[in-house]
Length: 113
Figure 1 (tube, rainbow, N blue to C red):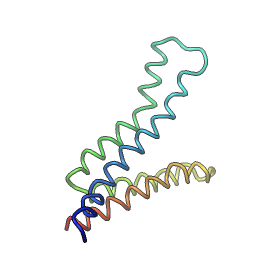
Figure 2 (figure 1 turned 90 degrees about the horizontal axis):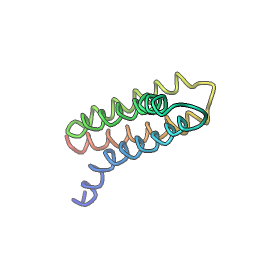
Figure 3 (figure 1 turned 30 degrees about the vertical axis):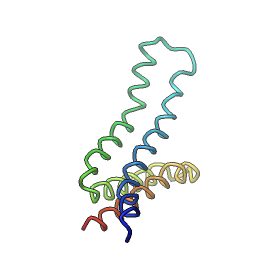
């Protein structure tokens, strides 16, 4: 395997995890709809961004241990499927990228070994 491909495969899960966290952050902007005080909006935004902080923490832990990223993102995908069973489009939109990032981390862990 070429060194360039190894580099891409090493960075792909990290970039994918951060990109997914940024994508998920877009859903937090719904707190700006409706009537609310600035303090209520700030609290709502913080609450909506908690999953993003958890994802970024997972990416940080998996930075040196890709198997943790594979396991963590895989578990998150399964948990989301269990929670959102009645909404298949939501599952495809949220759990699909989680599975993809988990697969990238698994590949990176395999290349690292």
